[in-house]
Amino acid sequence: MGKDALNIVWLKRDLRLCDHKPLFEAEAAQLPYRIIYIFDSELINRQDCSLRHLQFIYHSISDLNEQLSPFNREVEIFYGKSVEVFKYLISNEPIGTIFSHEETGVQQSWERDKAVAKVFKDSKIKWFEYPTNGIIRGIKNRFEWDKHWADTMKSPLILNNYTQTSIILLEHPFKLPIELLEELKLYPKHFQPAGPKSAVRYLESFFDSRGESYHWAISKPEESRYHCSRLSPYIAWGNISIRQVYQLTKSNLNVQKHKRAFNAFITRLHWHCHFIQKFEVECSYETRCVNSGYEEIQWENNPEYLEAWKQGMTGYPLVDACMRAVNKTGWINFRMRAMLVSFLCHNLDIDWKLGVYHLAQQFLDYEPGIHFPQFQMQAGTTGVNTIRIYNPIKQSMDHDPNGTFIKKWVPELQKVSKEHIHEPWKMTLLEQQFNGIEIGKDYPKPLVDLKSSAKKGREKIWGQRKNTLVQEEKKRILKVHTRRN
Ligand SMILES: Cc1cc2nc3c(=O)[nH]c(=O)nc-3n(C[C@H](O)[C@H](O)[C@H](O)COP(=O)(O)OP(=O)(O)OC[C@H]3O[C@@H](n4cnc5c(N)ncnc54)[C@H](O)[C@@H]3O)c2cc1C
Image (tube, rainbow, N blue to C red; front, side, top):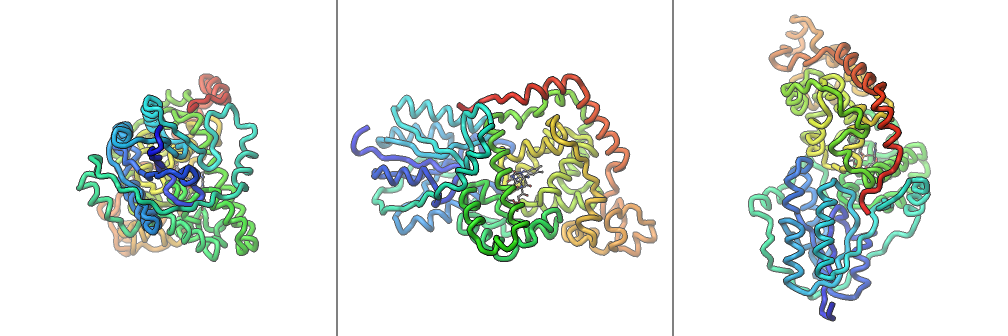
C-alpha cells in the first residue's frame, strides 16, 4: 500500500476512547485514520435487536464525538451491509490497515466478520483484531483461562492519546435513513443515559455510596435498582472496559471498607467474561438447547400466555411488575430476570426459544454471550446446572414484602393492601371492593395455577434429564469445540 494510505478503526461493541487498543494502534501507526461505526442493516433486522439498543449506540457515539471534537475527529456513521460499506471505502481511497476488537457475537455477526475478512484479503488490506475483555479466540480448552483473565485485568490500562487531524469527513451514500435517524436522536429518559461519561458517573456513585449495600439489595427488585452498579449497558456496548472497572474497583478507598459488597461485584465481572468465553466457543446456544437432549421436549406454547407474559398481564403481580419495568426501562436485577424465564418455561409451559428474543430486545444491556446461556440455565435446558423453579409469590413476599415495587409498575394494584398484594385473586368480592379493584376486570386472574403448573414443569424437565440421550449429550458438551478460529 502506498504512502498515502489511510487506516480505519472499526468500532463495534467498544464505544469508548480509553483502554482501547485499536485506537491506540491507529495513533501509533502515525498515518491518517478514520473512525467508523456501521449500523449493519442485516444485523439490525435480527430478532435480538431493538430500537433502544440502536439509540444507546447512537448516543454513545455522540458522547465520543464530543470528546473527539478538540482533535477535529469524529466517528463516521454508516448504514448498510458491512461488506458493501467496506467495498465502498476501499474503492474510494487507498486503505492500509483496519483495526478493531474481536466481537463475540451471534453466528450472523461471525459470518459478517468472515465476509469482510475476505474483502480485506482480496484487496490486500491488513486487519488487526484485538481481544475483548480477556476473551480468547480459538481456545482449545479453558484450563488456564482463569489465570489469563486475572493477568489481563491486572495488566496496565491502555493510555490513549489523540492527535489533531485534517482528514475530511466522507460524503458517502450509506447515510442512516432519515426516519431511523429521527428515532435515534430521541432518547427516552427512562433509559440509563448512554456513553462513557455516564459509565464513569455510575461507577463513581456506586463506589461512593450506592454499592455499600450491594450484596443486601441485589435480589430485591426495588432496592437493586439503586444499589446494584447498573454498569451492564455500559459494559455491554463497551463504554467502559472490564479492566477499567476492575482496576478502578481495586484502587478505590471506599471499596476497601466494604469488602463483602465489592468482592461480590468483582466476582460478577469475572462471570461476565466467563459466560462470553463459553459463547465464543459455541454460539449455537442462541438457537439450540445447550444439551440437545432437551430439543425433544414438547411445550404447550399457548400464544395467549406468551403474549400475556410479554405484556406483564399474567395475573401474578411480581411477574407482571418485573416485565413492565423491563419493558419500560430496559433493566431489572438478576433474580427477577431468572424468575421471568422460570415462569415462562416451567409455569406457562412455553419453549425458551419463544421468549428469548423478547427479553433480548428489552434489555438495554443485551449481551448475547450472557443472555442465551443464562436464559437456558433458567429454562433448565443446559443439562448440567441445578434446575430452579422460582415461586413468584414467595419471591414477592421475600423481596417486595410491602408491594412497593409491584404498586409502582402495576398501578391497577395501587390500592390493594399489603395483606393481599402478593395474591390478589384470593380476595373475596367484598375485599376486592374495599381494595378498589375487580380481579378479572381491572387486573387479570392468574393464567395458571402455580402449584400444579410448577409440578408439571418440574416433572417435564427432570424427566427429560433422566433420558439417556441427555446423559450422552452431557458427555459430549464437556468436550470443547472451537468455532471462531
Ligand atoms: C435470563 C437472563 C438474561 C440475562 N441477560 C443479560 C444480558 O443480556 N446482558 C448482561 O449484561 N447481563 C445479563 N444477565 C445477567 C445479569 O442479570 C445482569 O448482568 C445484571 O443484572 C446487570 O446489572 P448490574 O450491571 O447492576 O450488575 P452488577 O450486579 O452490578 O454486576 C456487575 C457486572 O457483572 C456482570 N454480571 C452480573 N451478573 C452476572 C451474571 N449472572 N452473569 C454474567 N455476568 C454478570 C454484568 O456485566 C454486570 O454489569 C442475564 C441474566 C438472566 C437471568
